[in-house]
Image 1 (tube, rainbow, N blue to C red):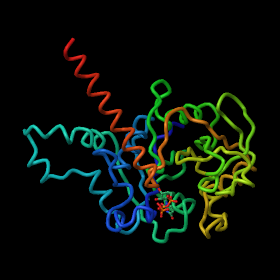
Image 2 (cartoon, rainbow, N blue to C red; image 1 turned 120 degrees about the vertical axis):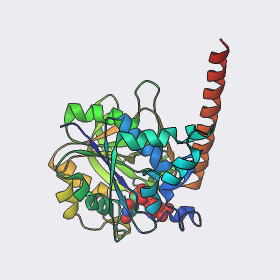
Image 3 (tube, protein in one colour; image 1 turned 180 degrees about the vertical axis):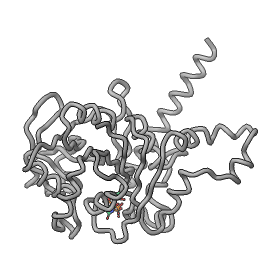
Image 4 (cartoon, protein in one colour; image 1 turned 90 degrees about the vertical axis):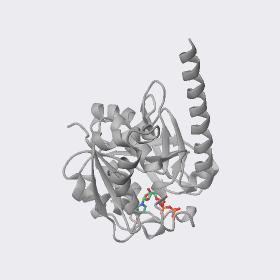
Length: 287
Ligand code: UTP
């Protein structure tokens, strides 16, 4: 079955970005001129998806407005030299549909994913955490499209992984696994935010997943874990014991835009990239 739906858990408080996130969702913070969540939606479209399911919470209405037409703005800007600023978002809105549900209590990422069940139904789906911003690999494409190709081959749950410095293991879910083919690990163990001394590896799970719908029943049976939250890593560990869960070391670049350092790094990176593209275009025009 082709993966058409992408779930965006976006109900978190974003406390590391206070006061900016007091009245603005973290997912709406822009890297250059584009909000984080729009980068995520564009990645899902690039990977062949057309149905975006967003789990929001209180104070997150700006996300819904962003993926809707603003008639007043359209009227003001139509036919002016500024109209091109709306091209990308108009394109996104016409290519896919958006549905929303609210996570009433923030009980963790696993719980947020379970909240999205009503929007996903009984089919495999992708998950994007928009605060993990990924840039495409020039040859392999977006991280999610690489994962979809792997799903087409193995039809099981897949998590994106990345090597992190050993001293950072306590910020991530960390896997232990056996290399099955280039960059693909069969996961045998997963630990949520382990201290470096006890971490089973330095392979960290980042915010891209492909999940099969049986995960919902597993999450329902998962007890709160680290931090009293229902952790997706605990549910996936159960899944790995029942069948196969793969860790995929993706090609491309990832920025942790949930932290200020990562956000600034992403901003600098995308700015430099944009300047380089502008220079390239100017050169081509002159030819
Ligand atoms: P984070 O751990 O980054 O939490 O969640 P956060 O609340 O957004 O940010 P801080 O730590 O307070 O600064 C990872 C992802 O899971 C979602 C968040 O929105 C984010 O995309 N999430 C987390 C939920 O949707 N619901 C939850 O209960 C927890």
